[in-house]
Length: 557
Image (cartoon, rainbow, N blue to C red):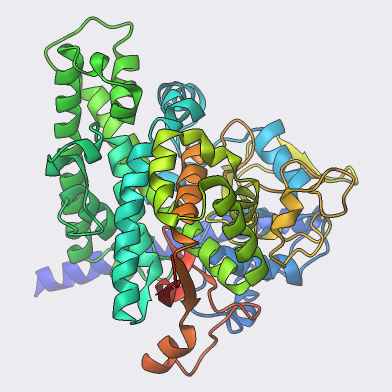
């Protein structure tokens, strides 16, 4: 009886302690915003107890429940225009204090002039995906060192040497699309394209043999055909169970079953990559990689060679390098396949809705590669630089990225550092996360004529034209400044090759109406500003419900 009483007292004390800690944190969080409000800083109507949590219900009720989080913030920015491209928002305990940035000039100040670092709060989230500290969350000298090691592997010259690998994987993708066309059924183009891009980034990052010239089944991921590769399967599963905006329920996110799956996936990925690193290092020691052409070297081959440049050779790679490399490769697999797949799907979607743009794109491909669609792969292998003779195709992809950017930017404020708007007003950044909303900046009517329209021509006109993008940093899907995406050349190459091999052979049509009827999605909000293919949070931003579609082969293709 005494023991029960003592346990009850202990439990009560713990509850009181937790409640006291929560109230203390609440007081300090709200105190920050009370001071900001006294200083006249821009923010929506604020409650001293609930902060800005009361602002969200009125916004969320007009949005689908699975919409990407940044679109919720876009609505707060649109509803609250009392500032010059920024405002503060207090969502504690669900998020740190934030400044939402919706203007490219202020975004440039954040990412270029001050070049704020990444906040610590991002690391726990990304660690599940990358298994450590990846380049995305690194700062200072650590980031510069990692960037210097990987950047050469993503140079345009190097990426063009990978043309054969990209084209080979794309041919497998095209064959899968033919199968779907023959079946005539609704399928998820987003899911299929994610598998395709996982195969591309896998062979370029880790594998090292031109797969078209070998029968070795281990030089590819085969996500499109068998999903048998353990690394690719573990990465896709990790994304599906962890990186979803709608999975913020702590009971789900921190359940023992989910934590076990995340740990198991992480172990599979690290074991796989470590094994590949040892293989590549053995090749390096035997000088096997030195005799290969650049096209037959993976990114990690180049990184190992650069890492060992000023080091004496040893029997094995050092453990610190292996741990670092595992995290970076997992990061590249994640961002390299996820955002590119989304860009490809949205490009095909927007072209299907704009027949004149699709016709112009097809005419450009015919002019460069000839009327026979089947000759394009061999032409690209023979002359990879043909991919740079497609200005309208490039414009289509850039306009797609403007309308549907895969992600935003996030930096951490610093003590004593202020950002300044166009009127000279200064805004403190200490203790805040600076959330650069690309979906707002890319559609800001101050900088973009016809901001919500698909107008690829804006990327083909000169400075004298009204459509010309006039402000640096107003287009920033790969971010802007020193920390822009090192893999953007590969993203553009992947997207252009895919459109070259797909656009003339197939007609793609979304099947949302049929999908909604079959899945009985009759109630609730189903679109964002009239857009059914709205973006959802699933890693990077992807089209809702996996973009259900039908596909047909064009007659004579």
